[in-house]
Length: 387
Image (tube, rainbow, N blue to C red; front, side, top):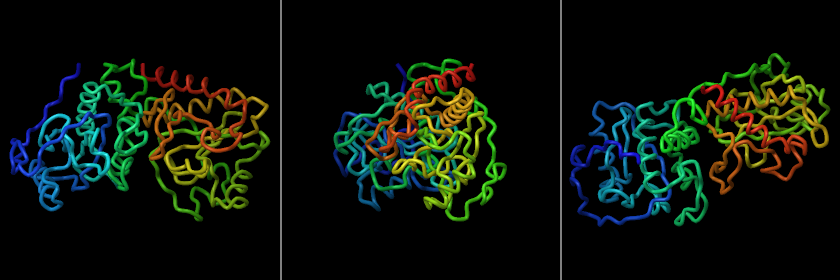
């Protein structure tokens, strides 16, 4: 059993009402979901305890919440602070409509723009979530029905998954897929070479032909639209449904001009020789136009050709698995697993086919039948590189 990490008590951080909150009576709940927040306050502060007191004042007095909203807070040094009075399983006031059956943890700072949480803060968050998940029997990589929200949610989710908010910030939200796996690994005692999905760039990026190199008419950029970075949680496989020798520039022209998409739809394309091409302008983690209603949390990869009745070449498949393994390792995605897609109630395989999300035959019957093997091969690459 994991032990609860060290927590600075309310008295120790100087809560004005001490250990208790005289203005409200604590109520308790069975925790089924762990909700991650940011405080949207400055990321640098000479006195973190004073910052916690300031947050308490904003919640308790300015907003008349009677007490601080979160169950726990974590500062950039990794120090964990006790939040709402009442102890373990007390109902907080951190997520309207989802306070029951949840524990709210806030990282102190603003993670919506350029700054990432510190490693110290993330390590403490992982330890705190792992302790609670093990105690409450919560699968950190799974999803389940939340009784108050009334739909299926990831068991470890962000505030934006349950409310109309940017919280916990774009940067922190993008880390949730890898955090879920880190929490699960800690509970299972998995470390080092046994870890299913490693941290960092263990799998090297395969060679990719740039837009300029394949002769994109607009070069590296796309003047017709503004790139939007997204938190990638899924990788969707396509075929172009063209001849296998179709040029990338021809596909670009069809997407950008004929269909009016301003640019090519896929993030990457792979030809029968296994050559990988850069697709949509904007670099890594840019939102494509490859899967209607499912672009906002996915990376789209298309094999050039029509694979409804013909199988892709082994070279193309090898490059596909290398590309997916690189991205899955970098984002700490489980290539064999399922995850909720954004704020939708849909649970999808992390590596899915286009037909899994839209009414289409894409990526063709032959590729779709290979997806279980592709997932397994991607997982094997990652585990091998982690040894």
